[in-house]
Length: 115
Length: 109
Image (tube, rainbow over all chains, first blue to last red):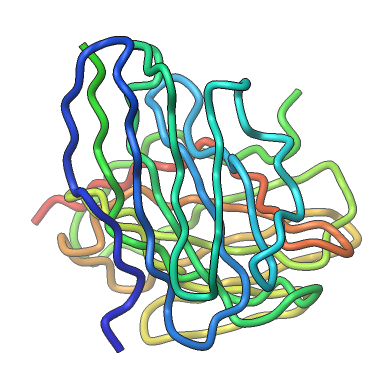
């Protein structure tokens, strides 16, 4: 299996622009997680889905952030409009069970820089 | 006070030394995870445990549920073990992970 796939790996954009990050989970996994990592705050959960349904979005910073999972093999995280404070590494992870806290497999991350 | 605390924040040791990284948490959990983040940024899950002890190669993870404490041990440390080690916990009824701030380990040849 190719593991969790994220694209793009690097994104540089200007303040105010829309940014879309993409994730393909491991085939057969039914939970998907979006995380953000910054030097100041470390790793934080933004949102997670189970069977394509958002379960917990309490970590989504504000209305500028939105996430979708239209099917079991694809998810997007969108920031509109982007701000410099959104600069971070965004990780997607997937796992194969719900309510058992199964091992999460992380993608390589997308490094976002907002100028 | 953070729900998950790790110590030490930074650790430098000589190759071959026995390494211990500690994690304490303040809430009830269903599982505790140890993750490794390589210098290049990739994150790998090392262990998930809810009781007792697990071993994988030179890595050993233990957890004491009553004391709300876990340790990650590395035997015969090697420079390739240099990484940030992150403790995370998941609560009952959901998979949401709450992370510690990480321990940066540097092994000197």
